[in-house]
Image 1 (cartoon, rainbow, N blue to C red):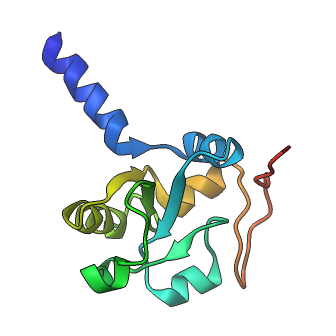
Image 2: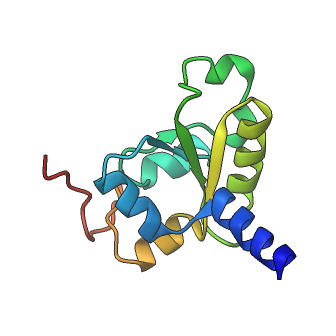
Image 3: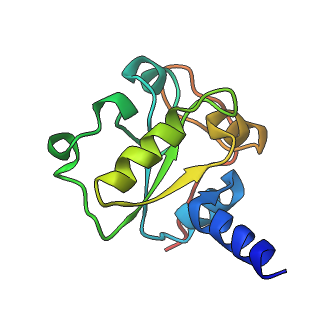
Length: 130
């Protein structure tokens, strides 16, 4: 049982689902979303408030402006893409606290959340009541 508990605790420490991310954004938690895909994917459609930092371009120089006290949520297209895993690994190696978004932008949209970009999807919009 101990190993099983440790496994699931670790999994939750390193991953989050779209609902958790939506709640974190709505609650103004200290998270920054990183779209780890190439810029054309980001421009077409991305999760609101996301920044674009392709995993292939993550370096000390390209991340020097980022705040290491925040938690970074990496995402890509979805389960058929591993750019979020590569991005999360790169960010962790660079000293950032990171989580990976389960299912990427595909599951974000399947859960009914809106996207932004040149081809956005309608859905529930992140709003702050403050």
